[in-house]
Image (tube, rainbow, N blue to C red):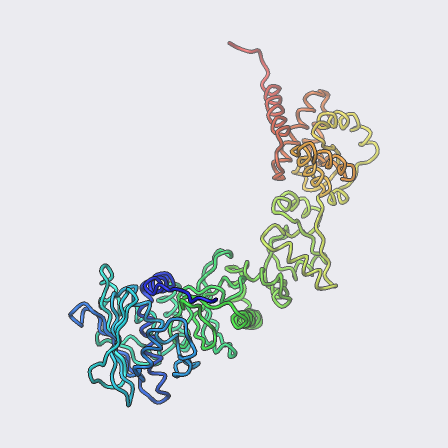
Length: 584
């Protein structure tokens, strides 16, 4: 046995009118859609006119919208205005044509956001006029209407508290926002709100002024968009200032010249956060509320096509106006680099035009490769700061890969081009470029090194003496990647519970145990004086202080033991530097 759903019509009307739409403001859009569809139904060559009289003009608090469209018969009134959820009859009656803006009739439900009663007075050529009256509680009535010309008049009687939505200033603002690009003449209280032109067809300076007026910024550039498969035309306005790459900028999207929304997401790929679009489409599908785009294959295809056009603009800019491209990259480098991670053409553009920070100044990857052959980079900004000066003194070029995407771009460039060599500089690699000491000097320094090593053994640091530039740097703290991993592994083992601690203890036997190095620079006069001290305690304090300074200058993490050493060595040196008897 089957049963029929029991539907509370009052509840359905409330659900659709109050929860389908985000704001009562959309009621003007829905009224305009129905009016334009009625005009479109007559066919080409008909001069459509939509006239809106606000509550300021009607004098009785109502709003009235007239169109000279095709009108409805009584049968169509029943099918289109009083039936929710059926489409077959709509198709048979001729109101499902491709060129229509919306779902004729159902848009009237949005009017219950601002009205308690809706009256539709309509007449089709060759048929009797009909008056349909709908109420917010779900009731409706149909009777013969007064004689009139073919077309439709919709009258809204305001609900309490919503009267301001029917006033002249509000209706004119909403009609201009939603309907200014419509191909039919629309007026509010006798004033036209349609412009007859679309912004992407304006002269360049006028497009700039449009963006300033409508989007709130004067664009860096305007990129024309055209996706025939989606019936899409429009423009992408490039932002003149940096924005957060994680922000999802909304786009102004029109469907058949009617504004869908000013904040549509998903039209562009995520990397194109530097552009805001204004487009019109005949093929993209709106959601039921007509406030977003339906995420289907057509939208995905459109998004990819627009991405290709933005990519093409960047390539053309690199070929025709490199200075302009450099200016763009200085503003929106994050978006271009994000694209380059997946796009070979953009990767080459970044290689040729985007300047990266190096210890030889700001140069592009192409220039760096021409000078040094190998794209040698530091993976973090702290690592770069630690090694840049020393590497430069050894004539080793070093790129700061610590900025967002830079290290990944260098790695991808080497992976896609067999002629490109890239390697991450291990801090301990620099020691191979340092000069060793002659045998006599090493023999003389052996007691000092042994004493210094005893002072730093408890910190897990190895002390070595080398000769390197710059002479002004007395000591350098170097940690190999293996040693850094070992420290992180040990810290994790110390924080683990008994079960995982046992597992990590077993694994620790396979983890390399390289120790960090404190490299003392024998070319530095201070190091030579410390090594020559006859006072072992004072020399030990000096080595501990050099260790702490090297940690700080290299932006290395300071462990509790390191912090304690910094304090005791500093106070110890002060105590030795300020001799004399203690006074009361």
